[in-house]
Image (tube, rainbow, N blue to C red; front, side, top):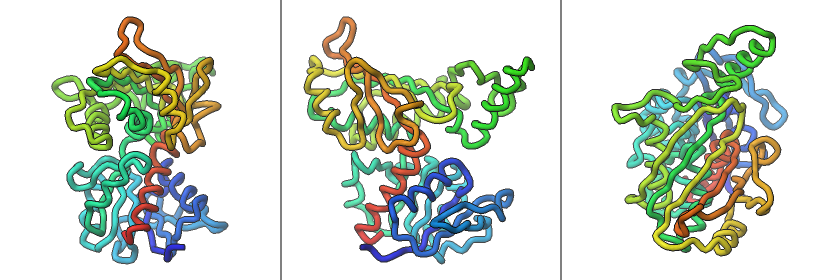
Length: 336
């Protein structure tokens, strides 16, 4: 048993923050005092934890010297604003927003590259990667010894919950409007999301790449320790409430041994391989689960060096909150 530590969760009323608090309780994390923080708009609300309702306080007025570990489950701007205060207070920090540079807060997936912590001095700053990067890393890491990667091509279909509660509310409202014979009024998105698929997520740069697409490539390279890995990423927004769905094509330097790939994935931690005659979906398989589901394992149509597969993973639980708590458990073992 490890001694209890005092913790703060910034963004505790969001989809990821709420799931994070639930997982802290489920895994019996050694929490002393749990401080739930959010913006002034959420102050006074409450979140259940171990049979009690904990009151939300404003992050603006919080003294981080009261805690030893801080989770950032709000947006990038919030992380950038308050991370310096956390550092000056001597707290360990786990960020889920991607708001800190890779050099300052390395991206870590608990089942893939926990050795990164060995080279860090406390109090540590870590980042939990984007949920799509976590799912991909879980699947790719067991295959490193089987093939030399030349290129990855991934299409990630994101759920509206990747934009938080506002995304969920927007899809629900637009769907209700359409089912009631009214034209939907886009608010959060730039066009209709209900019964539609948006081929771009967020603004793009001069080269046409969205921020999440660049983040996905950068985080994969770091987590897999493959700085020269070439990654082509396309992120689309799907009319789905929860769960990432990803199509992955791997171009290798040698012919793919599908039997060896299947064996490696069957034995991989954090991965559930679906039977060859089936395929996973977010609804019915991935949502609410602690593993990434993999199916449709096959070679290329005309290329023996190509591997194709399909991944379904819970973006809020497995792809965000659970990995953050697992990282905290690793920090606890090393004394933060």
